[in-house]
Amino acid sequence: MMQILLYSALFVIGTILLCKGADILVEGASRTAAELGISPLIISLTIVAYGTSAPESFVSFLAALEGYESIAIGNVLGSCVANLLLVLGISALVRPLKVKKVVIKREMPIMLGVISLFMVVSIRGILNWVGGIILLVVFVLYLYLFVGLAKKETSNARENEKQKNNISKHILFILLGIIVIIVSAELLVRSSIFIGNALAIPNVVLALSVVAVGTSLPELAVSSVASYKNEADISIGNLIGSNIFNIALILGVCSLILPIHIEMVSWLSTIFLLFISLIILLMLYTGSTVSRRGGAILVAGYCLYLFYIFSM
Image (cartoon, rainbow, N blue to C red):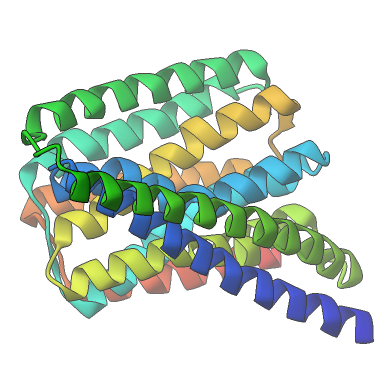
């Protein structure tokens, strides 16, 4: 009993440090991009999205390196579901989200395409290195697209010494954030494995729920604050970009470390992820807005999802 309490405390500490590390990383990355004159939407879809996905990245990478493939994939899929239901829902409850048409017509279809591609390359119940390379190629193309857009938006910043000093300071923040994230991810993986084994909870279920929510807290913080500040594009752009990073980059790299077998609960979660993505796309197409009522429905849907996977 004492060991469970100890590891539970380590899990909480790891989660807090993970969020703080992501916060530092996002702050440094977004300020660096802002210094270069890149728009908030592009920042949220790329730099901020990667920053808030850093916890998922390190947790899944460490799990894959240590042979816990169910945690590697469960964390990613669970975080993607949490982003679209829990995080988007809470953000809409904070303030209804009015989204630009470009997000609906460009970013949402890209996310749907990445989810569909993942289903295709793992159709036989395993994601091997071939499927992983395909996902990584798509991820590189995604980055290429948005780097090109960023270049078009970048202003001719003045190359003065003050700006150079600012950028150097922000880069130090990025490095500090990465270090904190690596340490806290190790704590989170170790403690969650012990707790799952002690309570006889399958690793994949634990990863889809508790670990996924823990690693999605940075997205929750960024998107809810952005919603409060009436920055709907940043709020939803962060979530869409994060999901694309999670599936294309994280699962792509993890599959190069070891072949990832897709358990039934993971397959069902992937199908559910595709389904809710289509529902949200339809919701945005019809009104370009996620209302408070819609947000409440999304949060309720997440509660039902958790109930379902724990009852399997």
